[in-house]
Amino acid sequence: METSVKVKDVIVLGGTHGDEMSGVCLVRKWLNGSPLTAKTCEVIPYLSNVEAIKLCRRYKDCDLNRQFTEENLKSVLADTELSYEVKRAREMNEKFAEMNGSTFILDLHNTTSNSQVCLIVEELDGFSLHMCRYIQQAFPKGVCRIWILGGSVEYGDTRCMVKRGIAIEVGPQPQAVVRADIMDLQEKAVNLSLEFIDKYNQGVCFDSCQIEGYKTFIKIDFPRNSQGDIAGMIHQNLQDQDWKPLTRSSTVFRRFNGDDVTLGDVIDDVGVEESVYPMFVNEAAYYEKGIAFHLTNKVHMSLPALKLE
Ligand SMILES: CC(=O)N[C@@H](CC(=O)O)C(=O)O
Ligand SMILES: [Zn+2]
Image (cartoon, rainbow, N blue to C red; front, side, top):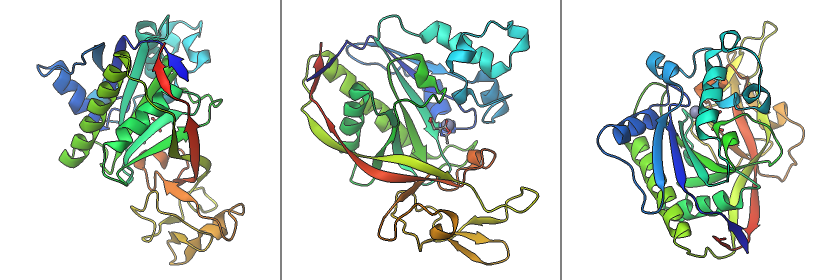
């Protein structure tokens, strides 16, 4: 049996990336007259990257969702020497970093890839893994998946401020655009998260169970020429095919000269019989990060039962 403390505050972040519009629009809606509430805790909607939202861009100076590192949060540099996003991360951390483990963070994101609902969770966060399973079960099969991050990697995302939290990533949605179907999926996932927290706070025991998730083992860049410019694009066979199994012989890129590139051409360590699962396929924000898609393995995890301490 795993126990955890009561959740007292839920911070619901929109606009951590300023051009991911369903989070921005939902948070604005909750702040302006249609409050988001739960029965057993305080719910605090909050716009993260205010300057980037104004610009309708992912960020102003640098990616806010990489700045919540220990180094930045403890930095002794004067504010004038810091980029907007580092200052903002410090400001948010002062406001939300918890003393006693009772704060939960829900961070709302969108992707241009055909991810559907993708719940992002750390593998050591048993509470949030149970929450992900609860959310997943309320969606039709194949709509909601769980992406599990390795426990030790320092990523500097918003969830670093607290002990428990998830990101709800929903796509496909172009940057700076809001789509009704995507916003509905996002809102449904938020409501289910709050429902889970209420049940947990009321003492409901969540039984031990198995969950299926995906873990990234490598990020694949585009083919590039000698100047470093992209020399090909996602193959039409792979476009929009997030989470569909690939093997060594699957075509993944088409060079601009027309040549097909298979997965086996770009990576050695996928076995001949093995299936791997792509995600974040053609995510617009990842071109500058040198990522065309993530390759994941399907994993199964056993969760012990969960109950309020
Ligand atoms: C497309 C996108 O922005 N994805 C998020 C994933 C996360 O929240 O960890 C990011 O790269 O920060
Ligand atoms: Zn994002």
